[in-house]
Amino acid sequence: MDMVEKEKTRETLHIPLLRRKWQILTFQILSTISLLIVMIRMNILYGSCTEEFILLAEGSAYWCPAYEHTRGLVWLSNTHDPLIPNFLLGIGQSGLSSFSGPLLLCILCTVSWSYILTKGEKLQNDIKKGAGIILALWVFIPFLFTWISSMAFNGPEWPLKHFGALFSPMGFFLELVFLGVVFAPILAGLMGIWGLSRRLITWAMGYFLLVIGIHAILTFEEISGAFDLGLLALPSQIGKSSMFGGLISPLGFDLLLISILLLIFLESGLAAITHLEYAMSLPEGSKNDIEYIKQFNNVVNSNLIHLVVIISLTSFTTMLALQFDDLLVSFVGIMQGSQWSGQVQESLELQMTYGKVISASLFMLVVAGMRYIIPWQRIFGYIEMNINNLRS
Image (tube, rainbow, N blue to C red; front, side, top):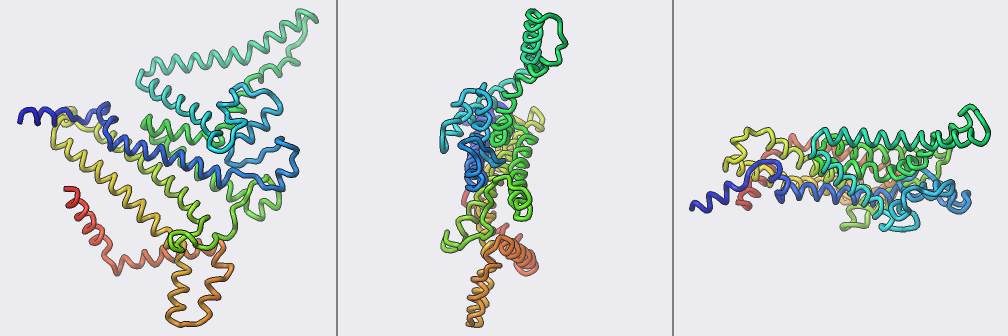
């Protein structure tokens, strides 16, 4: 009996031990995997230029502001040799292999950053000072060298014509900019997940939403007609529902998948931070208390179950919302038995994206009104009670 008690007391709510707890690691791994899949799916949907724009360009000397990094780096390499090796930039590679080098850089930066955070502010300040000194030397030494060597051969002169040497690091920063188009939110997300930073996770989430919004604006027909940046617009029609028994179209599924992955990334990443912050706020004596440990485990396990259940329900209800117009028209057709419902269901307006948005809005109004008829709280409470009974 004493051995059992000793085994129980080994589990504490101290942060170093909690960070190795399987539930916390599950949240962090889920968030990381969803972040990486979002990067790949967004590259497929938003990373292409139009064929007309490519044909107007000569060879590989073109770039459009798509969610793709190698095109801009290839365009930049036509003017100067990259300072970062090509295998780390993804140049000359295709498919998923083009992500391997930049992802390796992001992982190394995340590991280094997490390690530095554990070593106190002194090391952080020393690294900042060292980076500033190296950057200053990189900027001014080439300028001073060219100016002094020119005066050695040509006599005294003003340094104005040598100011171009001050911009010698500019190529390196441009390489980082083109990498950052795709990998800035990945780096921020990884640092936020494993460095326990809410700000970086929300910044990465906001960046993805900003990319989607800017792409939608720049590919809007009126704007793309005024100035063409070469971005490939998504189809204006949502397409025929052919997946999951006619519940959603392939394009709708791609967009829904990105949305769900973003939710998983945000919710699971913040969940790990929230639980660790709760454990950190407890009094020191409570962190070894068995009752507090049981309560913490129950809360974390419930959060995992809720994450799976809520994401599944959200996915299903979103599919229903996108298909709500067809459901209504089919219901009216069954009730009336006329050809009108079939003609309306095949109309172009319902197949357009704005038609699906109107349909989803109607679905939200219907579901919001159903709360006055169906006791949702009692139903969900009954489901949760049965889940808890199964767990126990």
